Length: 452
Image (tube, rainbow, N blue to C red; front, side):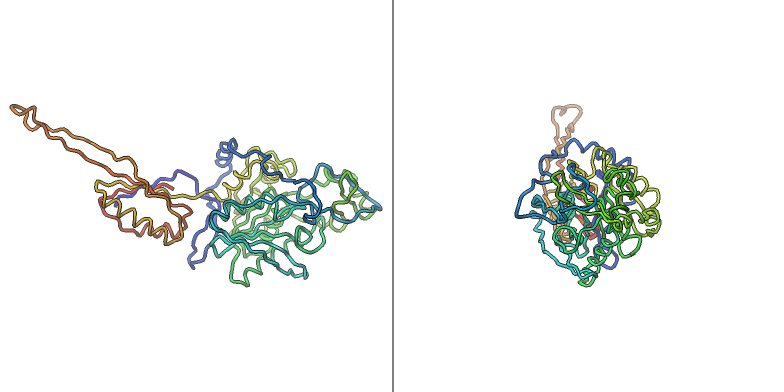
């Protein structure tokens, strides 16, 4: 068997492979560098769907909603301090985004309720996609597990046969508890309780991914606990002192010292959430630089940020890259804080579609058909999906040979060589799929070309 290989696409950042003990694990290659990804993502940006396809902030309606608004920094915010009448939170519905990818791959969904160490119930949804290990997704500030970013990432990961658990932090979404402005380490505790819950059920967490404030939470978690090998930080803020003046004004400390709190509300006068002095100091005291330097070298961290992020500047991503030892950085050109209109690019970075293309050539049809059958059977034993074999046009080479150069010069022999070709695509391969294919014994009369 003659085999030639070539790489026509980059390896996935987030791929499922089999470890030595036989359990799935997540990894992303160390060869990733930001300039390459910038050029690749910029080229794909023109094909991104329009932002109006699914609104990030749905219209207000009565009767349904989540306890906290799902947007990050509404344009209609108004600050209140001192005595205010409105303390209740404003319910706002979220847009239902059904996962067409998950449906096509028969991904089951299960609502799971976990009681945290504070006695509060954490509500999440487990997407079973075939892997024993799971990836936990953490939403951002005043968001929920139903945000478009979380749903897009869920689709991308489950389409790669990676099981996903997305949940609401306490005080957000469907989970119990009271929303607080800072609460970073409380959310780290929530994430810890989620990971321990699945560990009790013999399921390990191979990766954690967080968006915005959730990105800070996963970084803080990795600096404390050593049980997660892969961390993805999306649009996380490095300097938590920044952004407060833009939201509360330059005299926020004077007002919070005078009144003890600041109420953030809409122009209508309804209060959205309250910032207490304790919750504000909880944020200001967090040392992200120290947390980044505390992450062990065996924990791989990927930071993804948008170049046009006006909530958290992209310079913060460079700071993460400076202080985390085992770190990879990707800047998506043109993307904002929530990756509006760039969810496809974000999904392709975290879990690009994996495919192995095999092209076979042979002079004998029964030989090439038998080889195709062996390849397909080997791929299906590892739960990989196959497409083909697709018959390609047969190449014909005709040779004309003179029977005699003299008397019989007009008498000629014609010889023909026919090269039969077949094409097979193996979708969503694992390391076991590669091993199974490498162990195949194909006849010497079949030429095999493999492209990753």
